[in-house]
Length: 280
Image (tube, rainbow, N blue to C red; front, side, top):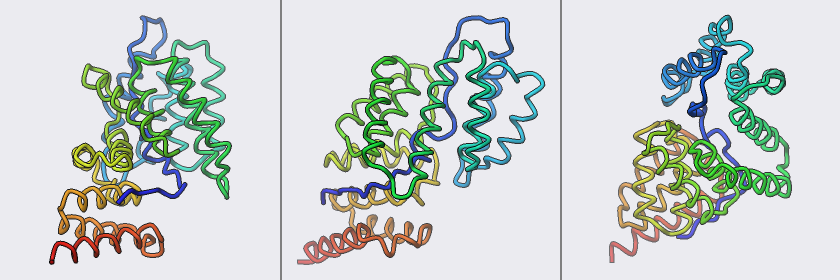
């Protein structure tokens, strides 16, 4: 079944909160030690089924005496506020980050894109024209930063959200290769987006592998309808009908609202047809 996902961007999974620390030149500020703290400690708060953003905020604010004013500190703070749905505080932190003559300018730019994406998705109804324009700017940003895994992973997630799956896979695969070469990024979001795009392209074997990897990284994706639709469809297409049925049941248990989603209803009907065909 070729899925055509509704235009409901799930920004939470585009990159997740663990934006990586990229290598930077030596500096007299405290940025390096603060970034090291972020890399070492942020994952324990967010790489779980129910991310603890409040706990991460409390931890990060404790680093203010050492890290405030580096630009990186303020950028990370803005991201945390975004995930806590506190846009005013996120904007304030981002404004403070932009005031710094920081060698973390590229990180600050990425966080600015994240902030914009959250604002676009918060609109009701979502302006698809603005989202497409935003996607083009993010893609251009990735084209200017072809060796940065974090940028490519984020841009790939945006392309997945917009339904540009060929473009998404090219970005996500490059990001994964850079990650394996030593650039740490949040893999749960990357694999989540790759699962959706592979399934949409009917590359089911690759979708299956990516889906398993996403679940290994963060079981919270089981509550993500778009991801699970891709998983269910992939399992059905690969003949794993019982697994697909179980996945549908898990999704309903975790996200009951899908019961009224026409897309879920169509997927369930398709799965029933597959069972009937297999029984003949």
